[in-house]
Amino acid sequence: MRINKILSLSVAALALATMAGAADVEVTLPDTGQSSTLTATVTEQATVNVPAAISFAVSDVSLSTDASATAITVSGIVLDTVTKQLKISIKAATGSFTGSGTTYSAGDVSWGTSTWTGATATPGTLTTSFQTLATCTAGVTGCDTTDALFSLAAQPVTTSGAKTLTLNYKFESIGT
Image (cartoon, rainbow, N blue to C red; front, side, top):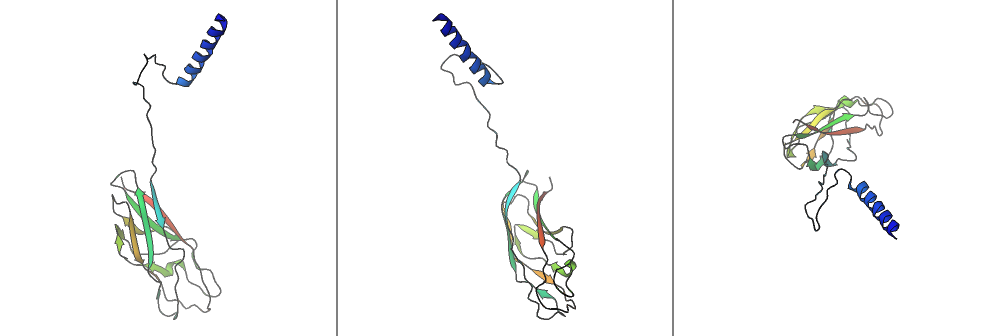
């Protein structure tokens, strides 16, 4: 019986020593002096909503055509510091629209200074490299516009039909 008790106590002591990990501390019971640190690692993040499509209804190829105003929303912005900003950039996936006949190039698309809440717009022309569309103000948790306006330049397009180009967005934190 004494051998069973010693063996049982040895197994229990081994199990407790293995579970204790970094620091074994002998305490007098009851004891409330032990603690563990809980760590939540939060990554930089935001929730974004961009238009699925932006359409140009070209009725006269000799004139530039504006697309309907579109909304872009960024919410839940969490950055490393309150002085960092969220930058929204766009680029064309390819250098020109697809479609039959003469078509448009990415550089035929431009945008102006739309009205943003919590951000500053940057006018520009579309290329295959990322160009700044807007920069959210430091310290805000969201920024948005309901009137992002894209324009398609006049081109001597010779065939009708759909001509498409994919627009890619980049959301990144900038600053320190």
